[in-house]
Length: 122
Image (cartoon, rainbow, N blue to C red):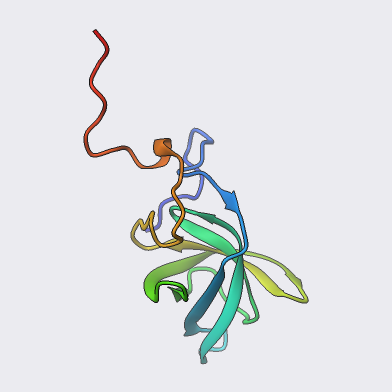
């Protein structure tokens, strides 16, 4: 079972950053054929991304995202299928396990509480 992109109270789980980041994707398309493609994000956050992909996908499909700058891999699931443009289809993916550092972006502090909360004011 996947966690919702937006919590029940209507708040997002993490801040969104509208930025283009090169990304490599691999997985199986809607026809069950393996693929590897270079793509580009539209929006990133600590829990996933919205990206362009030139493959036909199904909701719930598993993908591997690779950050070419770090070669880090992250397993994710397709949670949104959007419109198709000359850049590809807009695909929303959610990381299977949180990875706030995958994109190399520091997201807002509220997104990932510090391991040592600040002391209470006196």
